[in-house]
Image (cartoon, rainbow, N blue to C red; front, side, top):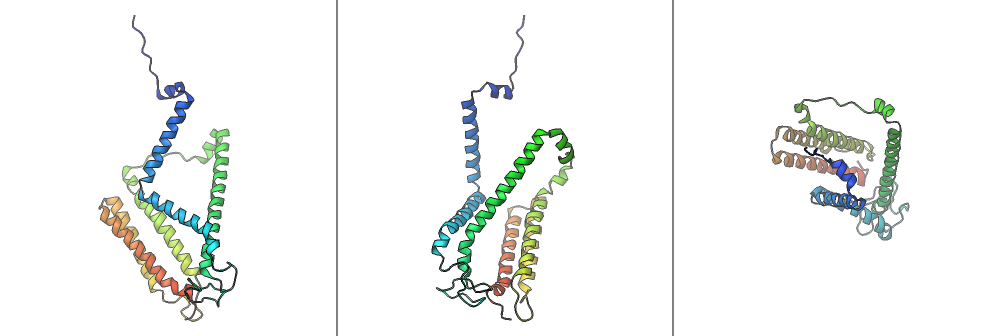
Length: 247
């Protein structure tokens, strides 16, 4: 008489493992994920920016030359080293001091947004787990099969959404709300802003075409350089409106 074969699945093996072994496995997986993430250049850049903001928030108020609400110069005064490293704002406050104090505000806003998002997500997750079928039938979109050609457009979609929409919205809002000059033209020479708009969209198109048609790394590199040039052109065009309002 043959002995029946017994197959044990991964889930069954996981149940048979002691809790300590499962904990060590999860810990090693987390460490491996963090190690792989740290090898990416973008991770190091993000951590570096975060540490700079933390340093500004901690050290800034101690090294700021003035109070953030103190009126130290006429409005829109030009930079005057060592008194006003970045000039004054529209009512005469020191811009450098407000930047140094602003690190704390940035951190508080980020923490508040994280707490709100975490609270909303946990609440919805608990509700979904409690009444899963009722919620799923009303909130969960049903998956639809898509042609592989449509999935190839995903990098272009992300590029247009994150870089195209967000960047152009940011530049448009900045162009609109930055201080205007007393004389015409109120927004100064707008040629730089027009060039920035052209360079930004040219970079977006080039990066998108490179991702969809596989043009190679050169397309992405040139596209990113065009986008950086767009930021430089916009800053060069807008800076005179920040430091002074004389037409």
